[in-house]
Amino acid sequence: MSQTTPEQLAERLRARFDGRIANADVSHAQATIEVAPAHLVEVCTALRDEAEFRFEQLTDLCGVDFLGFGEGEWATSETATSQGFGRGVQGDNVQGRFGWDNRPRHPQFLRRFASVVHLISYIHNIRLRVRCFAPEDALPVLPTLTGVWPSANWYEREAFDLYGIVYEGHPDLRRILTDYGFVGHPFRKDFPLIGNVEVRYDPEAKRVVYEPVTSVTPRVTVARVVREDSRWPTSREEATDDWKDN
Image 1 (cartoon, rainbow, N blue to C red):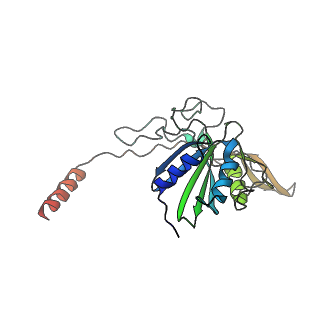
Image 2 (cartoon, rainbow, N blue to C red):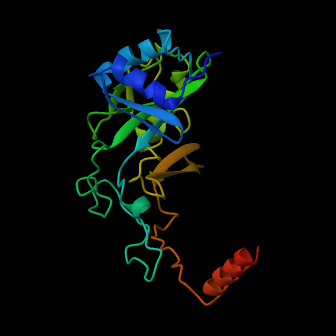
Image 3 (spheres, rainbow, N blue to C red):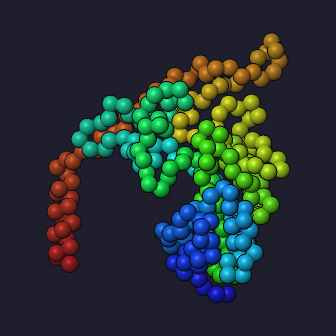
């Protein structure tokens, strides 16, 4: 078994897929590459088959919602925010501080939804993260990887269920965690905490029915403010004195 460092892997990836990957870097001792949807299947097939990579196993695939990325969600010093932690109660049609159009602009994450794949190569004893952003935010569509790694099947169903990412070419793209009548995608950051519908058994209809949420009252929670008090400077001074004594 050979040993390849993440930095060496990143260099090999840049050289091999020049023009096909948008970014290749190393963070937390793991290499990450960004691939455009048009090249995703081609690049992943090469990562699986070519001898210098040989990523035989897809260990995980998940969706990511970058709504509000880079924006602080609550204040933790001096004063509490008047808006509180409001992400979960903002709907698509509500103009809130987590509106996608008014989001902070990050130079790397220009799109909202991404699919992230974690791969492992047993031959080279190394892992790789592959990130692919959906080109459209309203209807995120990406190519399926089930033809490259069959283990992507249920993972992609999960990302479709929780984030609404559509994997084109998937053999059986259905919800896998929520109910068939579930409305919305619960891991999206603008999904209301109380949900869109609730279910109950109707004794007259003798079946389960879906209705607008009435049993839960939406509320915005404001984080507790952490302030300095006299115990903290004393504790720091005592710790400094102990360090000097030692």
